[in-house]
Image (cartoon, rainbow over all chains, first blue to last red; front, side, top):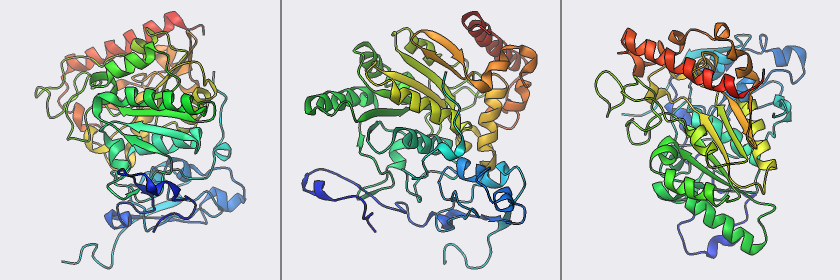
Length: 106
Length: 304
């Protein structure tokens, strides 16, 4: 799907041009082996109701954690690196084994 | 010195859309995310062959929202100079920032001639080196930026025999207006430095060297990516400073490390990384001497 915010006016240029798109490498969430889960009862942002932490948003290389109250994770694209769980000062993010359907149907 | 930034001061809009081709917990991606947030949408980027080419995707789609020119390895600074020249011709050079972002190979080894030429011409652009200390994209070959004792696929079995190039000092010899070192583990500091570099538009080339830990190349667990970069700063292995018009100032995190007793033991930084697994006690001593020498040079230049 192409991003609607970006006008495609320069499409007439005859060169190798790429357009912005979410999920360029597919659903990278399928790479994940460990799923991060935010426990809202431990999360300081939810408990105080103010934007005073958001370290998970800050350190996520992929940018899939939202800067909202409560913070949410986009599981379609989270690669499961575990930085958010490691950096959370209140241990509010737990890493769980991915179970259920196999990522690659054999 | 840069002003300190709070998390809520940073724009929320992501300039890199999720679902990129990079490894999980890629610190260069984290750095690039905040670089683009700092420079904003009116930026044109030039990238050489590196992991940054990987993030920009294959034919047809890209996750990055700003215009990007993919160039060959040696020509990133020259291509960016061409973009600056054509922007000047169109009269848009005041509003658009040109960023050249290259890996350590594209900066300290292959790209150094183009970079030196652009610095000599005082081309109005920002050059960022994201330093993951080897050619990670092609499978961990040694570069001029690999530290002493680190094992790569092209070093002797007991590690590299030479020290890392001091690129910030090489660039300082070109007489640049703004030189800074940063680390991907301190995104707020990184963001502030790029905002500062953007504000200094019109003062020639601004050079920022960012240390970005690479989990597969350095050999540590994915989740430790931020912690390793933080240890590199806290042990004094990676001093963070700015040189603004010839005056050196240490950044907040590095300022107190001028006192050797405030630095963490270097062992804490070396131990989790598999690339340092074969270090002998002599090599460890050599690395400690290197850190001490680096800080002695800095201590002579800054007033505490």
